[in-house]
Amino acid sequence: MFPNPLAGAQTAEDVAVTELRAAIMRGDLPPGAAIRQDATARKFGLSVIPVREALKTLTAEGLITHRAQQGYVVTELDPEELDGIYRVRELLEGEAERVGVQRLNTPTLNAMRKSMHAQRLAARAADAAGVIANNRRFHFEIFDLCDNPLLRRYVRQIWDGLDSHQAVFYRRTLIIGDTSRLDRIHAEHGRILDTLAAGDHESAVGLLAQHRRANHESLRAFLRSEGSLSQPHEWFR
Image (cartoon, rainbow, N blue to C red; front, side, top):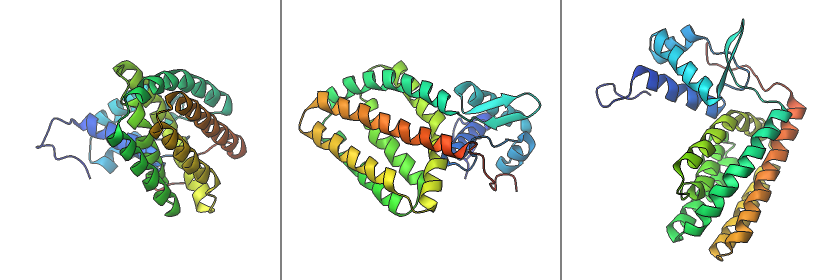
């Protein structure tokens, strides 16, 4: 499960950061879930010190929040906070997309199409983690073509901070067999790809903005309907 310590430069803190981030993004640690340092250290086969440092790192990234009298919990968002995040996404991603679409080539378009179809298959298999991973690959094919590394880093951090909420959203909707939003995402991705393949970059950027707004509206409605997203899980058992 973990990297071989003899094989490379990963420290115990690196391992803890990587595994905690993955658990949050998969939804194994949902928003609002408490993270006990001693139990997490035992789970990873580490001492408490690197786990504590990893929690500080993820707190700085916004994935985890430290609460007085409670300790560390996976960050929860309310609808108003989500609105602020999507406003920043609009500004940063819009700029990254305007640059990235100008540099698209056939291999990139093929990779996007592959991710789109893989996301569709993941949705049919009720695989929330697969849905999120392939959706991310689809969009980052464009973002990664932007020549501003600082902009790319900020975009990635924002996506990281939303993944745990997306995971709960997709898990809960897929459990009850509701694929309506995923069907719309597939259709929106298809239109974006067709427009990019036709070389209409300006229209594609507009479609990407519409797609982002639709995602915002869906997640906002979910947060309003669900309240706290925290749920029982097997992390500490």
